[in-house]
Amino acid sequence: MWLWPALLTLVITLAGIGHAQPWRDELATWSAARRPTGDLVRLAGTIDAATGPYYLLMHVWVAVFGDSTTALRLPSALAMAATAGLTAHLGERLIDARAGLLAGLLFAVLPGISRYGQEARPYALATLLAVLATVLLVGALRQPSWPRWAGYAAAVPALGLVHLIALTLLAAHAVAVLLVGWRGTAAAGLDAPAAEQRPGDQPAERRRTLWRWVVALLPAALLVTPLVLLARSQQSRQLDWVHLARPANLAALPGGVAQSGVVGGLLVGLAALGAGRLGRRALLPGAAVLLPALLLFAAGAVVPLWVTRYLVFTVPFACLLAGAALAGVRLAPAVAVVALAGVLGLPDQAALRRTHEWPRTAPVDYRGAARIIAEHQQPGDGIAYSPRDSWLFLDLGMAYHLGSRQPRDVLVTRDQRQRADLWASECARPAGCLAGVDRLWLVVSGRRADPVAAVPGAKGTALRDDFTVAQVWPRPGITVALLAR
Image (cartoon, rainbow, N blue to C red):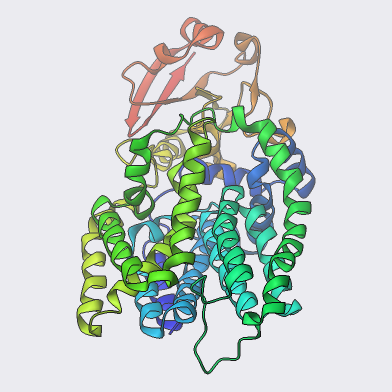
């Protein structure tokens, strides 16, 4: 049952995987992944510590497979395909084979799965590890053994190292473990088929369940706690663009993780029907959907933490509940509903293959700007950016698309690698650094009729005093200007 959802997810996710140019978050991944290991450690000490283990993984991947757009995104596509297969397997273990199959197929056609399966960020890998950890937990609770608990003990720290917020899934695991320890697997909705031997339901085994779970979490506590402390110290800088959570954020969550309001609403409706049909068997998947969202919302109402994509790892569990609802009807109508979800998501599938920028109405055409520079540059040209310290990463966008053809960055005194940061530092006196430059490419954010006027401070003064604008090329979200002394 797991094979067909995995193959369908892989086919859909690979379709057009390289069409949308890397957006700002992916440019950060590219910048980090190309650095030596020592520089990655230094970067984690400055910013993005929570993503540091993922950057290390991508460092190894890029060294082997290169840094093309497709190569950068391929690990996420493979992770989502594996997640679909594991979702089907988990559905078979918790409900039945048909529910697992339909859950995996529904997972495959969601636009959000393509979106994050085509992004060089850790969310797809976190989704895979969330489902894997849950599969291993179910096995350990049903038939306890140290090898099963050891597998779970390895999956949980991996989940935390890839995505700290995904550890909120442990709240759902805790509910299941406590119920099994108190009343057995049946009370937690984890009762196995009658033909399956269930030593985990013996009273002596139930009493040991909680302690085994706590011991299994020790590696996660040892490995993840230092990362949490380091990330906490960077939070004000890392998430300075995030606002406090509001009730409207919860209402928008289904459409956000599904990347489609209509499909997200359909998923919620089916999940609610499935929860009603399953009864106590809905406990674990239902808690895996609700508790992470509620915990992040509660924390985000006090500290700016709420970002919708941080909860993508809950989608497979919502699909399990939806699959249970679809399994209650004949196979043909159930597959028709899955197909309907796919058709309703087609406009969003097409849109996400045009741009990954958020919001989609404000794309930044790094590739188009780089193409203009490549076609018109001359030997000896320089380049400058404004703003330099924003999350748009204008300099990284040009560096990615131009590579060795990029003009000399004349205002830089220390680049990103030297600073162990995602941003470079510039001359305190720009006029002196611009001396000897006769042609200068200026890249600014937004569409600007007069790009030099948008440059603030001493940099803008030096450009206005020493250069005239020879030509301007506005592009979506970005403007390129050629200045002549």
